[in-house]
Image (cartoon, rainbow, N blue to C red):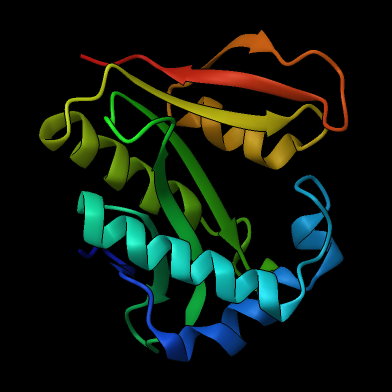
Length: 163
């Protein structure tokens, strides 16, 4: 799948080192669960490859079309295997923040999911202090519908209005 500037594709084993360099960064992982070791990144890639094989979609690897450089991911994971509720997520290397790339990818996959997967719900879970992701979700048309009770994470739940 392609947008104007991005290629959204399935994961390959060669993505491990490039994606590990993204996930080991504190600035990238600050609102998730802290930097990941290479082993955790390998697990993520295996999970996404398996999800793509089982369901036909995943959290897609994001590659710049002009350089074929892996810059992060954007996509869905279902709340359950029935795909009725899809959680959207994105993660980009900081060199590509504030360029509209996450919006470009997320907007594309939301429209595709709404037309092809027909989920009952598309939602995001975003830490209350992650202002950039909250702004992106709002720009996508998502609205805050709940706040997760404060535990290890302090998150908002945002929902996308489906047609």
